[in-house]
Image (cartoon, rainbow, N blue to C red; front, side, top):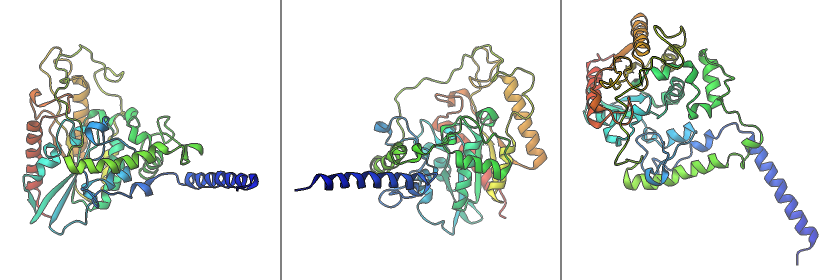
Length: 371
């Protein structure tokens, strides 16, 4: 029979061990190490795009903030680069990730079926897009992506991604404060490292109990890998959706600004320069992505739900001017597609629309001279 003293000692030691374990766990500011441990590309195939999902029961997917876990689950992490591979990495927003598109219908998927070759090497494209709009988010992804020996970076964006006031609104940015501050410091970004949107965990929040949601997400991501392998489904494909607006409000306002020009230095073009520095000599193609140009009500005032004409025109003029001055590689596809080739957003494309974009991008890749 156990004595009361023995039972008391067991309870005391158990509590002490839990406290020590939580204190040790809290000493690690991130869960990057755990994120790199993955069954993807080992027990089941890597994903063709980053995990992102709001309906796990139908998409076999979920959104999480651990960038290392996202890369570990990606097919890019499968094996070493082949000698005959010309590796192209695509970064950008949901238009690159492929909202409402199956993996083979995305820009990367359609580039891969074109069987392009450069310098006697086969072109292989990888989808590193992520469905939020922020150049800072793209820089975080690009920094890790450089480990994978790219030969070309294709970076797609739209005006919304340039607003300094919105760089931290992406949840994956806000919840990676350590990585964000390192980028700001290393590249001298004109962004506030103490921005209130950045999430800093206190001692309690860094414990095992405080991070139970993060730990559960890492486990769930592995569990959904089984269903991903069996079905190839990584997002919920609704049979219907609300089409992007064609009839627009007669509103000239753009985030509180009025014509004729956007305020000086409110567009974070310096983040593009930082991206070129991160790329370390690897060619970077900037793509001003296609957007819906409405012909509906008040289309003489606004191009679409996002943009009044004056704001977008000023942004585009600045982008083209800077590209010419600094020798940036720019593919300006803003008006490439008719409004029929957009789905539930002014930047989300139909499979046919994405095919047209892929052809233009593929032509650019094929036309580049060998180094």
